Amino acid sequence: MRMYRGWGRLIAGCAVAFSATLSVGDVAQAQNLDQGKSAPQLFSNGCTACHRSPRGLANGRIKLTLYMFLKQHYSAGSDEAWALADYLESAGDVPHGRPRTGAAKHAPHRHGDPVVRPPAPVR
Image (cartoon, rainbow, N blue to C red; front, top):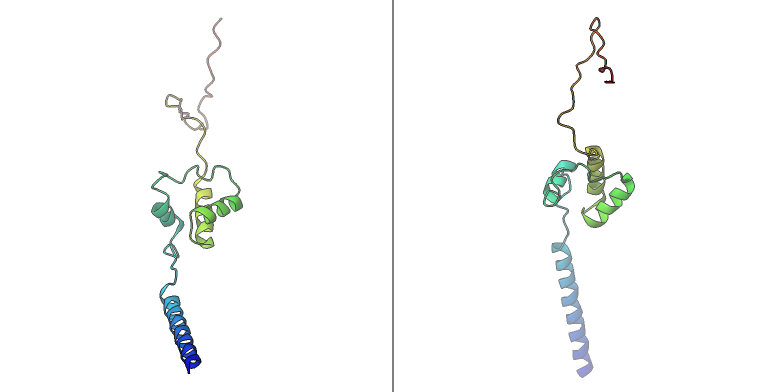
């Protein structure tokens, strides 16, 4: 009789464990909160804390390496990583150097206007 009680407890314990596993499995499903968002939305939600704009972030990288970096470190899924990689690549690189403020602005040459030539060197 003692052996029968042990089996009953074992079966009851397994039933409780099995039902607990089923109920936890239904409740704890992961959600991708970034799914369905556009690349600019993804950038503004996750990247603007550290980066003011997407310009220059691709920094001449190959899109595949940029995708793998974003997928590993910053995005929840591969679709979001591809979208961000495309967005960063399309934002372009930062122009080199500062623009000159005192640069002369040339008007387009019109037919009949005299050709503007630089002044002759001073001797």
